[in-house]
Image 1: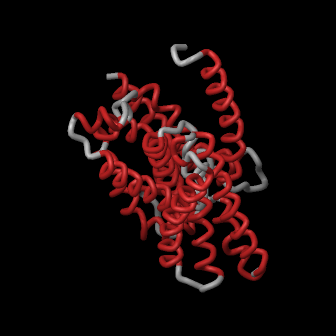
Image 2: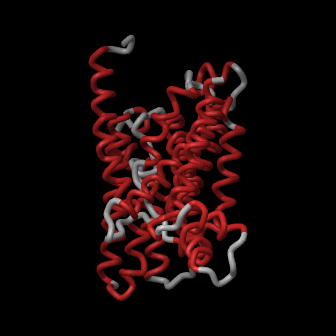
Length: 334
């Protein structure tokens, strides 16, 4: 019941945010938005703003926020680390890097850039595993895992910046995307890759019960008939596909995948199927809110949504680290 009530509240909140976002910075009233959507003329100003600016931007923000949040929750469950996310493990940086390399060095089409970014998500995890194993304790050490993710992120971010600096004529074309943006022009990427994220979320929903059993330990999960290797592999592929498809559409929007799981886990508990749904709605609402702040608070300037989410996420990250530190000092029974 609690999950259902919270989900209803979040859905209503998201609907309100969408209405506010549709009004945008152009000064459209709610009545103008409604009239333009259902009764507008083809050449009306309000309808043009909605169809070519506000709605595409809103769809990109909703999709990116939902996919990053679901990916973050799945990764935290799979690697059993509360600080795991597509950003902290290097997935977003690797996907961005290969997307930029494909576009700048090989002049690839947007679709090929997207496929390269998806491949980059997998490459990022492979690099993370190699670095973590080289460090000694691999996936079993939370500190080693996060530090390895930081190394992978810095490596691929450095390559991305080097490529963009080497080709100044293509820099502006990829700069906004590489910093995280919900530009309405990216709706074409969304139209091409939305199905990857949706199928990945459906797979994670199907894996909800096995993953919940694995949260109690692989041995206990195996005792109730869960094939932990297959479930972990399928879950990791789905999580990477969610995070990678979000990067394809909007670039790396930091900290959504890190913060949202900690907002929904106290409500969902071990009911991961409900947790994934809550994470998707919460992540979408957070991303839409960040986009609204980016467009309104800094007027007359427009700031990338990724910059706003990074600033908010940085504060949230410090609060989370302090929370885990104090919890470890109080002991496991606290």
